[in-house]
Structure formats: C-alpha cells, structure tokens
Image 1 (cartoon, rainbow, N blue to C red):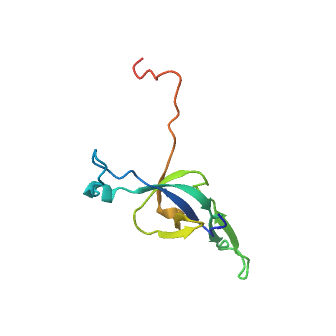
Image 2 (image 1 turned 60 degrees about the vertical axis):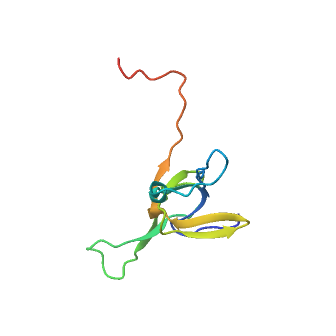
Image 3 (image 1 turned 135 degrees about the vertical axis):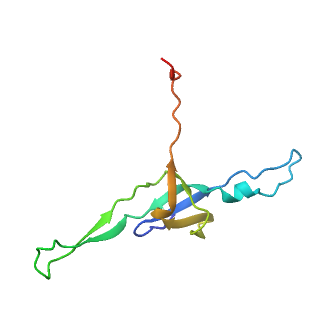
Amino acid sequence: MNLKPLNDILVIKRIMDEQPRTSSGILLPPTEEAADTPYTGVVLAAGPGKPCTIQPAANVVDGALRAVVRIPMQVKVGDKVIYSRHGHQTFRVDGDDLVTFGQDSVIGVLEEERATSQPMNLYP
C-alpha cells in the first residue's frame, strides 16, 4: 500500500464479521443488535500525530515564537481496534476496501489474550 496518512489519521482494514446463516447456507438479515455494535479492524497505517501549538508564557515579550509539537499517537500499526459505525470514509486502494478516520474515533484497542501455562488461583 502506497498511502501515508497525515496528522492523526488512521487507515484501517475492516475485519468482516461472519454473517449468520441457516444450516442450509441461506444468509439471515442482520438483527437490530448487530446494527448497533461497533466495527473492528486492523491498523494498516497511522499518521505522525496531531499538531498542537504551545502558546508562549504570559511574561514573554510579544513576538516570541510559538512552539509546534505533535501529540503522539496512542494507536500503532498492527493494533486491532474497535471503532464507531459512523463518521469514517471508505475507499479502495490496490483492490482492498479500507477505512480512514481520526484517532479520536477509536473506541479502544483489543489486546490479545495470552494463554498461561497454569490456571490462575482466584481463591487462595
């Protein structure tokens, strides 16, 4: 993919949920509950972060330079995220259907469960 997002924009490849089917293979229409659930996807590209201007202190003489810094991204490439069903742009690049939106639209990052060799003892 030859796409570099700007500022706090993320490029996501949506993970399609399995649509329910009958035992004979007929697709069932989505339920109301399914229509309200957020989407999941994998981050393919992330911008460098949102620019933020730092105002000079009150005691600095007028004409002082303002510093511009970037707010670091909390989401990185490869993260599996949950995002809202609304407020994103869908487009196609190199035959892949991709989604783009700002980092503020991410609800959360899904962390993979790590299998432990021994079960946890909840009751000592």
